Image 1 (cartoon, rainbow, N blue to C red):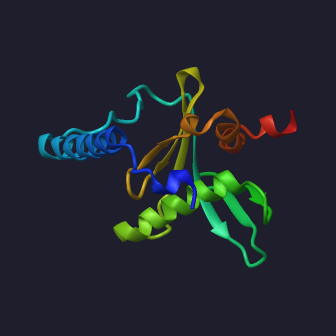
Image 2: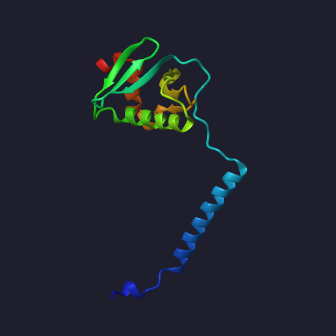
Image 3: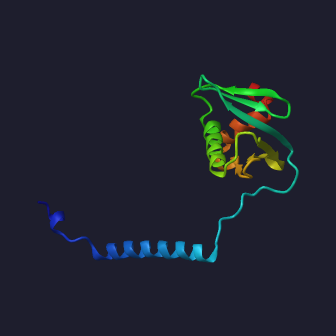
Length: 153
């Protein structure tokens, strides 16, 4: 048995940990009781500079076909094992639709606002995702769907 095993745990450290846990519980309770919420997503009311209504369809081979619903054309096909960020975001929104009883019919509106801010809105549930929040590389994965000419460069 070592000397550490016979020493009691330092009392000040236990008191500090207890105080931190107590503060976290009190702060959470105060936020719930006062109705405190986080700031809303900073979507301005200005008209988008560009937008596209998208539909996503899973294919038998594991790929995902992305369609421009207004034009009725295929924007791209996401091959199996690629575009994990796009797949993850759309999968999360699809799960949200399932919870709200919304089918796969409504479009996902991808839109850009002045300054290059890019958002994805589920027109079925009204949920809006600020794609900048996930970093520029992930945002650009969606931006190529809005501006296909970016894929060539």
